[in-house]
Length: 273
Ligand code: 2HA
Ligand code: ZN
Image 1 (cartoon, rainbow, N blue to C red):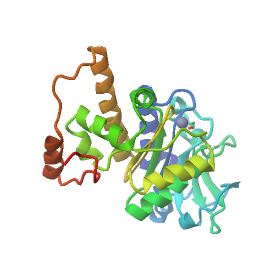
Image 2: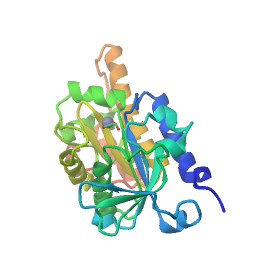
Image 3: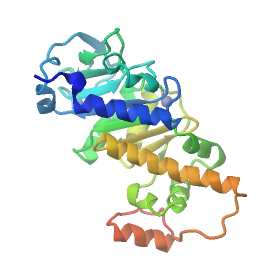
């Protein structure tokens, strides 16, 4: 039988963490990812059946009882995951009472899931209500998006419109716009709850002066969402370096037309009538 370390799930996690590191989105131990696996997917591997350890979750995750998540470890460096996935990743199952994470594979030197795991699980709960196909939560520190949180008012409509207008594709990829929470201490249940609340409405949530929380059906799609948001923010930064004067822009009518053409529904009230 196949070994889990050779699975497509581990390979994709290695790819995404490595690529994210190369883009300067995940310096040192910055960033974390979790991906839901189905029981059928897990059953294909005979080295992920035994519970090696039980870890306290610190909140009630019972809506996810019995669900499997492949997750990055706390304190681990994205730069290193590709070289030692069995150490820096873990496959866990949420216990039947929703209070514990049962470690089935990984964290070989005694690690634990990311400090943001409660935030991830709270966001997973919300995203599954919106769309049962959602599997991924991805947190990272994209440079130009973080910069925007210093120079722009922290208003969802304003930042969403700014990003939509930086590139024609933006509104197609995130028609609901970007959610924003107030600045808060990372790793806490409080930031987890605030993020999860936004996740019922948005697929990407800005943590001011820190980074992004993004959700999606697959690692590729979620990474792609961050790429498009960060690209738009990067264009804004480049406009600044070319003098900052905007001579012409994509109008609200043009944004509506792109969205219509691709069958997307822009966030109600974000475009001017
Ligand atoms: O995992 O990025 O927000 C390290 C972080 C915390
Ligand atoms: Zn972070």
